[in-house]
Image (cartoon, rainbow, N blue to C red):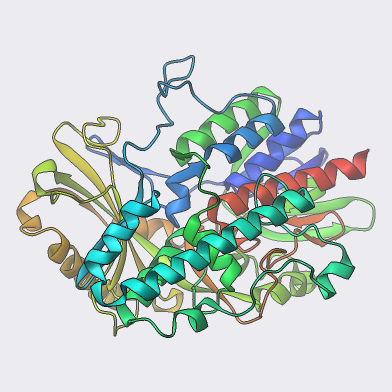
Length: 491
């Protein structure tokens, strides 16, 4: 790849959804864009008729119809299928969930289906928490009132369809007029049992990329309600969505180059940015640079100017690495009543690492695009400290994960058709690998995000650290905001 003489308008480093959305939006306005993709990083794993797609949280399995409609409008082509779930080519990539259950929460002594209809959820909670019925009903009444307040504020301030995002003037930031409650969710949950507190925490961590220890009550409410009650939620094929947008990117004249990596980034006073590529890749130049990769992988990219990124890396840290295990299992082993998405914790008194906390995704029964007939593709996400990635600790971690799975699936061992840890071993070392749960030490303004989109002049960052609490919604939002800012500079 020899690009020293060619200057692009925009260069995107990384292959996340946010960067792809930004790149395609800019191409729509006839700007030259090059997207650099890491060669050894793969979005999915396919083996023996199974297809596995790892995820960071459940927002990468379920997406709001309103968000897809907005992206479709911004990019100028349809992303939504017909009511039958088929597009014009007959592909089936979007489906309405068959049941109104977001996912299932499994505690040591309880199993709760998260129904969107409150009366059905109340039935579940009365069964599992019979000694706290009154306080729990009061808690949900409070959450419902707060949800209405947030909805009124959104309408009053004319906020974007993707919510929340700060739009208030600097006066209102210092003197807020909205009657929103202050405080943290942990303080509000203090009177409840340990089991119910963990039930709420697991819901928040399942939608977000942040540890929920210090979530403001307003943010916790948004995550628990996952938007608004009347919003339609669709099952998503994230890889299929990327492929669809990528096809339009290439069709519109966008360029994609697979690279081994980047040695350094240099910024000239007038020449814009130059990325020196590893191996014999040469260099690529552009006026604008967009980075779509986790901050912790970019420490040495900018040399002396790395402090621009380190400043924000100190503010938000990867607390856990999400480690995927892929299993092909026989249909018979799936317990009656188990949902396709679930989060499970074995011991409330132990840390989340070592297989104690698992996020699971089962392919749809009968879906032969994901698993052979009579089989199910099971993706198991467990948590490990990023600093503990070595062979000895990995082997111990595997034992903990399998012990948890045998607890959830009795007699599992005799019904496993395929086991794959290799994908995790190979992919977790990639600089593009995006699956982390973060923690922030600052009392950040969650409606503004944590990391700014514009790091410096013509240098932008799109990644899950922007709005980690919004999951895939936040990544898409970052891409649209950055594209808009760049287009405004050209206008």
